[in-house]
Image (cartoon, rainbow, N blue to C red; front, side, top):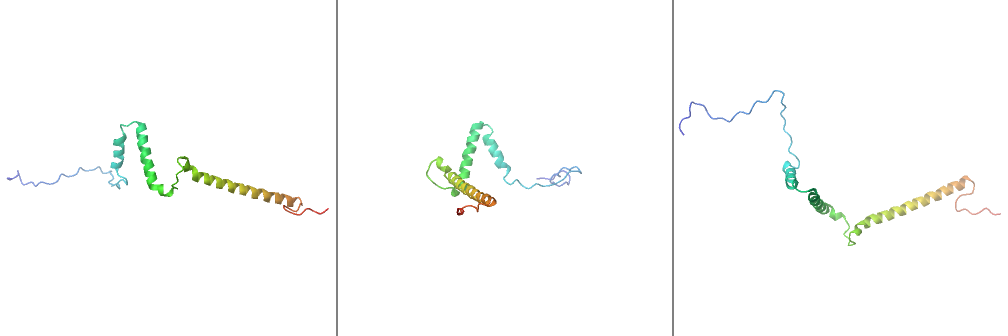
Length: 128
């Protein structure tokens, strides 16, 4: 291409000098990535809250069910049937609580009877 003016060779531009108090450190890349968050913002920034909420509920429901659906009992009792495990737990808890209360009261009655010299619970009456 002909001779260039002078004998200067082309070189890459030098980076600007940084101030002496400037700390140079590199941050690790974002674990999810900034593109993920900006895409969500771009898709939802012009929508009303009701649509954003509906989209999120739909996404969350599908994600939750796909991730944890194998741990749920697949019964056919309808919407109220989802309370079946809760009801079974509460009935079991009620029975256990009643058993504990009964045993506590029996032991308290026995201790009180022994304290007053009656011989305790389930003893034969003193012959007259």
